Length: 342
Ligand SMILES: [Zn+2]
Image 1 (cartoon, rainbow, N blue to C red):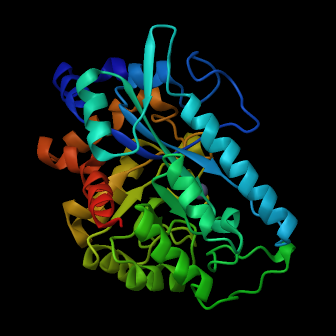
Image 2: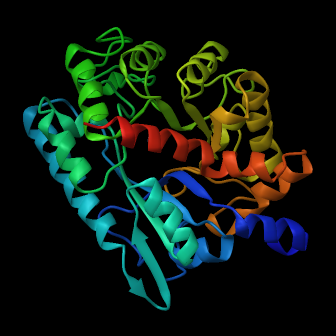
């Protein structure tokens, strides 16, 4: 599809600081990220697609909440973060750099290298030991998604795991430990990510956090009623706390029960438009959830990223707006979180 882009759209896209805020990695480690292989995001595809930066996520699957499982989840998170850090190297003529701060992300753009932001998905890996959060931060991690599918010791999820014995609500949102975890995330300079959390958890996290919260990969309920999406009143909270919702490329969040092949950048841009109209251009961003279930017909991997820019340009977003959507808003939150860290 890139062949169909106007030279102007392509040039504009290449000039932007582009950050995709949610990318999974295969685990155990899969195909080489420096080879153009089966991954939806590898460095050759990032270069071809003009995707400068990515939040690469240590994703922890939910399991039953025994201490042994929590310890195993923590060990996995540390091993994945170490692996993500080791992706920062030069190979096959491409340089990738681990960039845990805003200034480092901007420097990577100036230097023309791929930028890697480590992150952790699922507070299950914290267990009951909040000291683990500083260990994540020490490995460059910049956000923690409080839950994944299933409640954990910190908070309720929007998708209770009946198979693990979850009731609809366990904590009524954040637990006492979860509130302390938010304070610790604030202290170490990690962003509070409310993708996957219940609506109560999201609302309470927004109240408790000293810094803006984000959803790194969600869409809007008004266009597609799905537990993973945000209701209008939640969007209003995102705006009120100066946060950001990163619209994501998961087909079932974009249109009810849609398959990836049925979805296009027009569906994706509909969610961006809706959120921008509701809460303004400063509170909306872009993510893929590539290699974690996200993709659709004309954004099937990172190499297609310019198609998103082209569709948004067609809808009247100018350069300034595209800068904000493609990472400027998220980086504003990231910097605020850096500056508020103790
Ligand atoms: Zn996720």
